[in-house]
Image 1 (cartoon, rainbow, N blue to C red):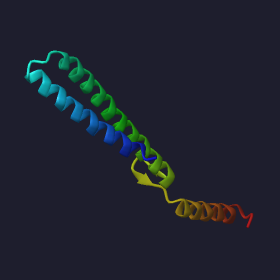
Image 2 (cartoon, rainbow, N blue to C red; image 1 turned 180 degrees about the horizontal axis):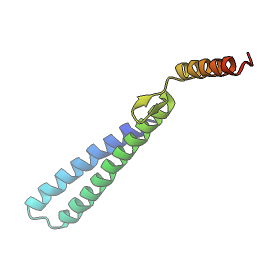
Image 3 (cartoon, rainbow, N blue to C red; image 1 turned 60 degrees about the vertical axis):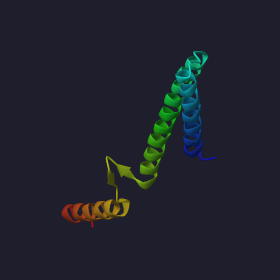
Length: 96
């Protein structure tokens, strides 16, 4: 299940409920004010869930890709560099 997509659906549904409640308030139905307040709270919660999930997904994608502080790590290049440095150390030490 795509949690992000489902949260966005919930966000739209709550927004529709809010619009209906606001129409009721404009027509003098004070009971709708409570529904409007709850819809706003639900909308805020849904929005926060979407943002939190997006942050988690992006962080996970970066971890999987080896990205640290917006830079991708090139493990092959690092391994090659370590190998070169070890070879130089062996040559310098005469341990060839």
